[in-house]
Length: 193
Image 1 (tube, one colour):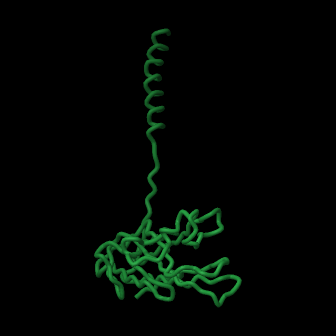
Image 2: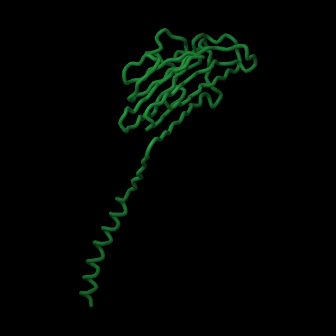
Image 3: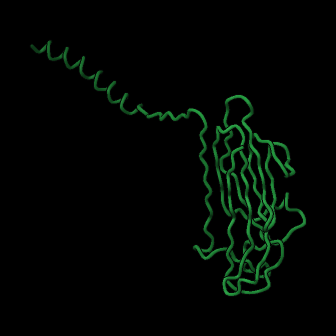
């Protein structure tokens, strides 16, 4: 009887060890896919100064972002302050992403507006319309009231365009001279062709 129990223990102990190792080694793999035309995209903005917004005073020596947001003659090498990100995935054969910045509007006196520039930076495969690109790297600039129009094409074969962590940068076009709270909207629109 002792031999039988000893043999049983010898068999059970390795099985327990194998089971414990197998449980530690298990992982999940989630498989996602699409059929036909599919589009997913999103935009997210960053919070500054505990949600109070950006300090737009470029003459304030305490303003740590003043050099990033000050007007420049070299916008491609000094894009500004990163204020948000966007991403997208598309299997639609051809579509446009149109990005249009508004003006900064003084909340106390809406007749006071300040133009600004946005710059969009990303890496991806794309064809463009109405913009000067540096080949596969997007470094697109638009001033208030203008639009950035990016046309993506997957070509005639099945494929997808994927852009992740595309940066949106902000820079003033001129100095803000009237004090107050300013707000603006940047509109993102997708259009299929």
